[in-house]
Image 1 (cartoon, one colour):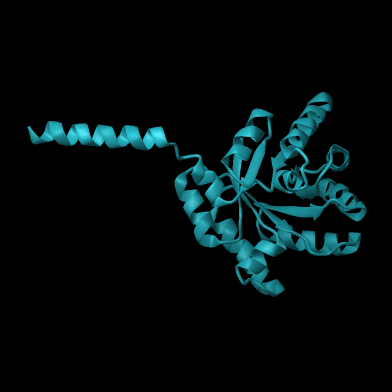
Image 2: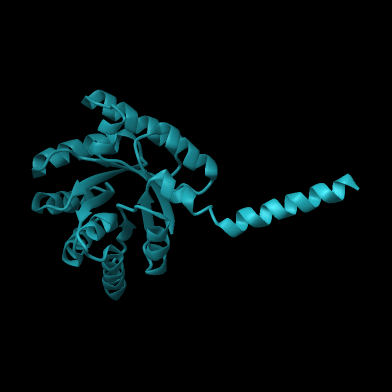
Length: 219
């Protein structure tokens, strides 16, 4: 399973990169706004800064909702860096744009996936990634992880190469559950990734080892 971090915060991206487990980054307009990144030139510059930090894919989202707008924005984003994956919403013109981009050799991430049917359409159009939103489905009492499993099964049935990117990850158990059902990628906050480090027995065991070492060294 690949680990992506879902943020536009450069410090968090660097921390995840330094941890040695980061495979990529996903961003969106909301995350950019959270960091105070506004205006096209600033946003484009920020995407380039992210690409300079990480070694893997960086999903950069289009703002337009018509075919022509998405094509124009997507081509500009793809020219920024070879790591850029154009993030396109799951709407009718978005599917058309994915098909266009796939024929042009531009990689895509179809976002706002909430059903297996949507994921199937995105794969048929040639999406590189699909992003089902696990946490947002859980928020409305729907099993987000079950959707991940369903999409993984469908893709395996027909040999689609589109990768299942579990998005809207809220906590470490989401990561483990998505790994269990075969998600290719997870994207979530740094807090969810670093939470995988923690276990009380690890802390207790380490404290005991250090205490025993201190006693032995004092003799």
